[in-house]
Image (tube, rainbow, N blue to C red; front, side):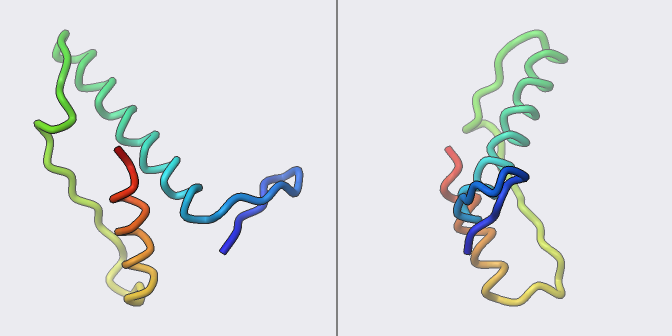
Length: 71
């Protein structure tokens, strides 16, 4: 599956979700580091990604794959 931007360029949907999840993760780490006045290692945090219960197995697997590709 592909997503189109406003210019009509296409990118795989999995990549779009990976970028979104990575942005949220990086922003959270930055906010934590700023408030603690220090650095936090990403390995010190246990992440939980929730999805709506009404989502089908295919959609849930898609999100799991996108999240697991984020480093």
